[in-house]
Length: 251
Ligand code: PGA
Image (tube, rainbow, N blue to C red; front, side, top):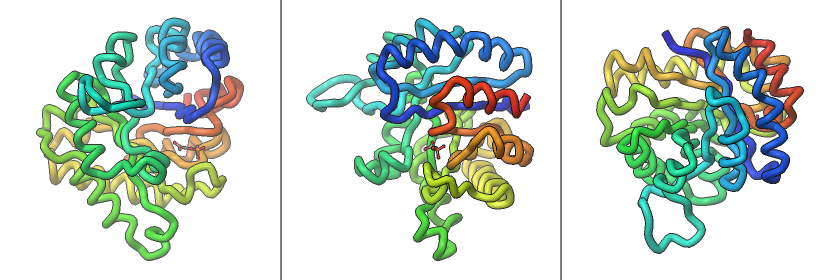
């Protein structure tokens, strides 16, 4: 049975003080989510991670938005897995489309990061999704399949048990143009099929999220899709009232 997962991606938003304020306000929500067997989480900036980890409920998932695959070394500006573990962080978003677009994050690079994370018993949230141009050219499944096959290569069934995949069509992120429920189910179902082909029955355990302009008004329709297990939410996860509403609407 796959638990529902609501994960907020704060991107480059919130100072440490703002992150702490949110964390404190989210405490009661984590308890409510728990009672309903829903996993709740947020991904602050690197600087906000510790403040959220120490001030939010223990059951709140706190994810980094990126990580380097080397444990240390001459990689200016990077953060490593041991550094995250030291402050109690064991989830990391990998391959978000903004990192793919602005930071040259390739499928191969995502794979290096995912393999390194899984080796350290961390949970990657692997983001995939097509651009508007690819969508219009009817290439969605081809693009997503390649992202999955390359991004998750060199792994076996036991490795991917706790993996989370997020399908986020690039054209729907921050645009207000969310994908229809039919598209979300079609692509998430397709992803599960590719995972089954690669890893067998464990594919039924892997959580697949939809992301892209998810709002309190539309979150329920996505979560009613058989292959959509939760949502990765940007803009609507920033304010505690809207975050609470997202949760309330899927209880
Ligand atoms: P959005 O962002 O909800 O603001 O569209 C989603 C994401 O980028 O994860």
